Image (cartoon, rainbow, N blue to C red):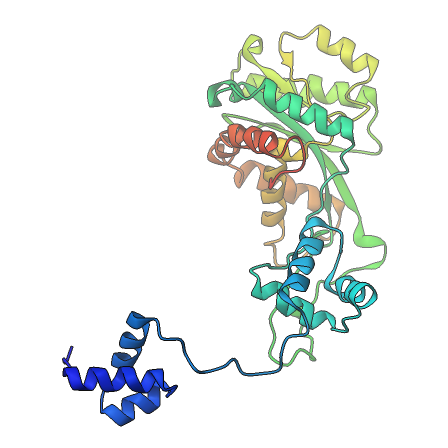
Length: 339
C-alpha cells in the first residue's frame, strides 16, 4: 500500500471535517478513495451524505409494533397489519410497504405447514410421552415395528406443485398438474417397517373394520416378523390411536401376542418415522411418466416401489432419528415439531 505524507494526511482530515465527500477529497488530494475511507473510519469522522429517498412513514416504534404483531400471530398477514396501522395509528401504508419493512428486519414469509389440531390434552400427552422416552437409545427404538395406513391417489398427489416459465402465459403440458373428474380414484394401504427393512404391505379394500385389521395383524405383521426372523419377545409394536386400533376385539388380540404394544400419544404423526417412508414411496410413484391406467396398475406400482425402492438404510436412518424427534417435542413443550 502506497504511503502518504503528513501534509497529505492533514489535508485529507481537514477536508473531511469540512464536509467534503470521499470522492471529492480523493480528487483534491490525489489519493485513492480507499485511502480516504481508511482515514475517515480510523478517526470516526461521520459521513456528510444523508440517506436518499422519502422519509419513512413508520417510526422505529411502529416497526417494532409490526414485528411483534406478525411474529406473535396477532396479525395473520401483511394486509391485515396494514389495516391495523390505519385504524390504530392513522398510518396509511399498503401491504407491500409492510412486507418490505418486515424483510428489512430479517423476517421471511413461508407457507404454513399443515399440522394436526392439538388440544391441551394432546399437548400434555405428547410431552409426557417424550419425557418418558427421553432416555431411550437408538438400540431401544430399533426394537419397534412401526405401522400406519396411507392413501395413495391414482392421478397425481395431493401436494402443491411448481414450475418455471419465461412469459407466464402459455401453459405447456409439463406446466400443469392434470386432473380428471372425481380424482381418478385412490387406494388405502397398510404397511410397516423394521430396522431390517420394510415389512409386508397390503391394500385395504373398502372400509377397514376391527376384523379386517386383526386379519392384517395376523397376516402381514406376522409375515414380517417371520421374514426377518425377529424374536417376538423383543418386539415392540407401534400403531396410532385410530378407533379401530383401540377396539375391544383388537385389544383382546394383542393380549394373546408375545410382543409389547407401544403406548402412543394421539395426533403425533411427526413422531412416527414411517410417515417419511410414505413420502418417499409417493415421490417414487410420481417419477412414472404417466399415471396408471387403473387401480390395479396403481397397486402393482405401489408393491414394486415398496419392495424394490425402499431399502433397509431408508428404514434405519428414519428409526435413528427418533431421539432427535423426542428432543424436539420436549423443546416444543409438546407442541408441533419440524418433522
